Length: 128
Image (cartoon, rainbow, N blue to C red; front, side):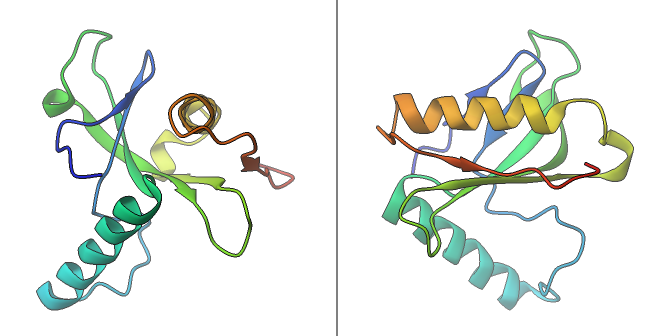
């Protein structure tokens, strides 16, 4: 994934390769670690064609990515499983607004249609 203009779009969100983590807790403490993390994310995208995506909230349906506000991260990862799995996390102020469901559906559709993945794992913990 080397196209800087690539994104998956929903009515309210853009999902774009971030090469930046918004998870809050992070071991990125300095520029060297940030560059190492970015390279790892880029390598996953090159190897699998997917990885981490920034979820950015559109101020309106027609808004550009540049005018949208990053609110979380969505992942399509292939770890020990034979198929990719979906995960997500959003800043607390944006929780419980359906962005996880919306972004999860979009990333699963992308995986099936564009990547040809017949299976995608998506699990939800009780209480979420």
